[in-house]
Image 1 (cartoon, helix red, strand yellow):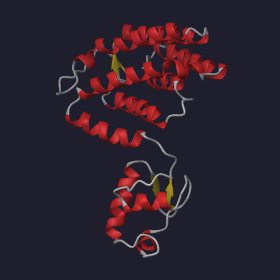
Image 2 (spheres, helix red, strand yellow; image 1 turned 90 degrees about the horizontal axis):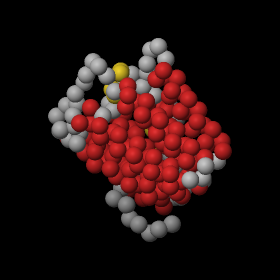
Image 3 (cartoon, helix red, strand yellow; image 1 turned 120 degrees about the vertical axis):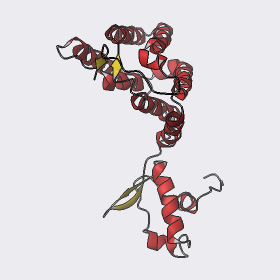
Image 4 (cartoon, helix red, strand yellow; image 1 turned 90 degrees about the vertical axis):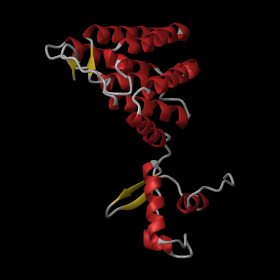
Length: 241
């Protein structure tokens, strides 16, 4: 355990007591006791809310407060959404970071994928095609998110996974999952097939090239072109989810 002093009595308490995911925290009244924290109830509530916002603890009525499995995503998401609320253009900057991150970890992540993972990714492609080719067209956002996150699911790096999860949350928040040209959507899933074919063949370089080309498509999406710090354009000619 590293000797790092955190700017929170509560977080220091959790670390020093060696509390693990699933462990229950004492009540606020118990934490006020000198044998625990010995600070005011208002201060504990304030620090508890910060810990909850960061995704470090789960607070449930009648059940209590428990330590959660560590995830970097809640902290990134909170800060990222604040940036987006002030300027939607920041999505482009974060999208660029996401691309560089995935490229950097591409070979390592692909080498960890199993035949079952690739079968699952193939199912996402088939489900997406079904949505796009049905009478009532739907945008396959969930399949899109699941496909990409599946590539990196076996990386033992919560910071990489957290950044990628936050990216897809932001993608949804700026509503890129709701409107797109039909031809754009079909091309996106053509690229997904090429990516998966490359991975399945063990040609990770070919898959990576397809991935990079795929990420460049988003710049041509009308709603991305409208990110001028104001509002995103909506067009009735676009497919709606």
